[in-house]
Length: 256
Image (tube, rainbow, N blue to C red; front, side, top):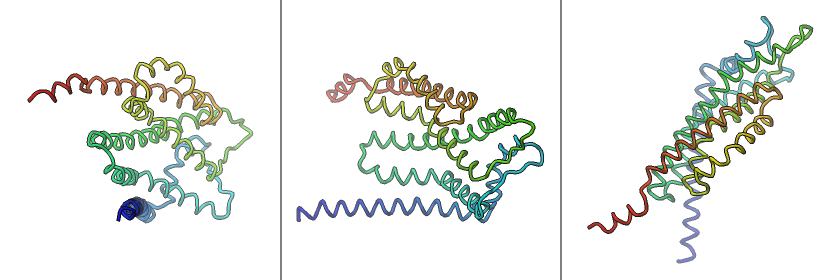
């Protein structure tokens, strides 16, 4: 009896995990089918390619060097879009799986963090698409010799776009990381403020590794990272001030 109880609990957790994973995958597939029907993979890819096309000479198009690339690349973009649109459902399923093992105050904190992290990731992608791509592509196109006609390959373009989306999406998660570090007691706000110089240097190093080898794109990643670090410090400091002091808790327990 005693040996079967832990095993049954482990199996029930595996069943719960499988159920949550299936629901998350189903949500992504439902969005993918809807997008595949309307507006279609080609229209979604054309929207993604607008920043690059706007920087190319008039009448110039992108090229596809592979045999099945014109089909597979738009489908890949549609799948990526489906995952982004279904991200709230995916994160909710992850939260619902771990929520029973959290304390009540941790549950109250977890859901706002999931919602805010989703919003910040989407804001990072939007900033990358509307600001970074349009600025960087025009900047790079301005250095192209007149004897060259740029014709980017669509597969290389999508790979570059996905890398940049992830980089800026993760960068916009910096405030959440700072808040979690402070709330969990790993570091204090004072220590993070003292390490501000190291953070700035690290931001530019990360930007140099992730972004293309031009100063503009590196600058446009490093500066938001530093600013978001400061935002995280402000929010974490405000949350710390709102926490009840230990003596206040003791007084509440003694009071009849």
